[in-house]
Image 1 (cartoon, rainbow, N blue to C red):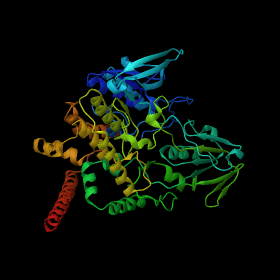
Image 2: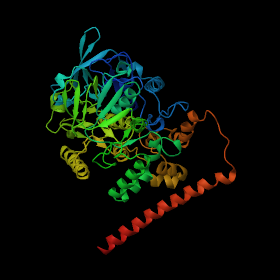
Image 3: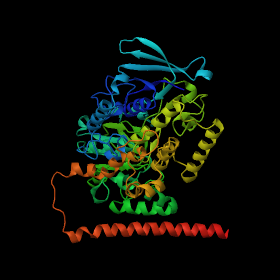
Length: 541
């Protein structure tokens, strides 16, 4: 059984991993290369090599109730979508509440993680660290948790003629604010969440802004129906179960039609070749508006550079370009790990459930956050940490190597059959986090909840899949989970209720509940018909 665990990085994944280690009776020792916690979410005026970097205006893309730690709700007065500084403050509250800081060694960089000579028997690791004054030290650990993130090594494409371009080329990793682009003609390359944000922000000050995209994307805002957080409206168990029963082509058609009602993605030059359920959405509230206002023009992929002239794939030419910002993502690299783990022929395919490298004889090393869920990442990392620390402690066990490889192959086959262009790191939120929760017996049982606590069962089934649901049962059960679920909408409403408006007349108030009840009954009726159909079909065949 592992006792002493090295935790690399003190961002959100590192903090929750320290806490999970303590929960399982392990001894965490965290190494953080900077002088503070926060990782990605700690803003600095200048980017620092080998560390993640964010821009000044960055806002979260997932709402506070969906992204919080499962046993520590965010303060009710926090906005539903907060800035990086507010999220960092939340991390400080979390670290103080659970007394985590005393386990962190700041300004200490991990230089190498290697298996000990007796790894086949002990499963132990030698970890070499270097302090800010250059002092190196070798430690022995029973297990290693890698929480250093994968946004530290930018990827920059090499277009033909790029060496002839005399303007400034930079990556989003270097971007802080739009001031240096004021009055200039700027090309943004790439349209992930950062690319959309940066394009919008630069378009407010630049003379002209062009957004070059290799492939389109589905763009949605943070606001859902009735002005409530979009993710709280979409990520629900009932909706996911219904989606599993209906043809995927039908669901894609319905959702694409709904989002195109607001603005036509094809007309705006954003229509991708893939269907809306195949890839994660890009979250941006202002991008379509900037396109509509003419401040931002969407262009296809760049064909070549000719000095300050940019030629696009459709033959369009833009002259006098002053700057190019590459929002082309990052490469997940872990230079301190053994090459056999990170440079295998199958790359990320060799990680069981995106956490454990299957090449290791003993499951004493785990990597967190190496996944792109279609939902909030923080609860996923927390669930990964809860599972991994129980494996380290000998309380949970992984399947055999053959079984893990078979599971991985099956998952890849299922994904590629659905969409040949999907990356193996992309995961549907609810089934992925449920699959790990199942490993630690933390997945809520809907049948048991409906039998023992119908009100709670109703909220878990038909309400948003907030992280508190994974603290209702099993190891790590939190007594406050039920109350957190029942009060989650109060915390959503509180920061909005700065100018209270009188409630409508009683006759109007009673209409909405009856309509809601009608739709729920209709949903249950559809489920019943589907069940009867399949039962009859199975009987006849």
